[in-house]
Length: 289
Image (tube, rainbow, N blue to C red):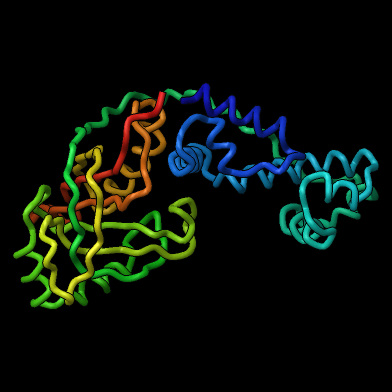
């Protein structure tokens, strides 16, 4: 995957002045758009769109330093108006593009290169599970995206679940894992940024179609799941496992993630404070060769 990522970087460099759609970039990488954007984000720390924008503005800076007009540079890099380019450039660099030629002071953003960094081996246990179609049945709400720490809005969601809803969930639960799960989907930023909201559901997996209206019902089609068990301080271990799935496991596996709800469950250790066993379930498919 590292080879493919670096090939994509070169492709972006060759097309910075073209109408460079993110879907075309993913297609060039040979994987689904959803999968590629997730891998790119977890490896680079920025979204694919942010990277392309930063590279365009960095190259625009060189052109401005070489004496090209602001208008010519704006349209060269795909901006529809001079005002749009000026606002984007000022936000990115802190300076107006018209000032660059006068001051000679400018900001740059070099192209990425993906390399293997060996920091000491750490095993990552996983298993592959084929599951039939099922429903997520539970209680859901929109909550803020949060990558680290305890999300207080999810805590409030858990506290809002009534005894009647819990009883209904227990009655429906009939497919592995036989646990109360936390599922996330419909993220505003496609899980690529710690901003916006996502839908979070606390509930169970069931094949029953008759689900009480007191619960939300989310259909999930039959697919393959990569399951990652983990154990340690909660929630740091669970969140670290999720990050490693995208940054370490997916780039070297034969699988790519698909756009369905992912979920996890957690069993707190009664004898150790803030310590838990968890499993992360990621919907995947074999990479297309």
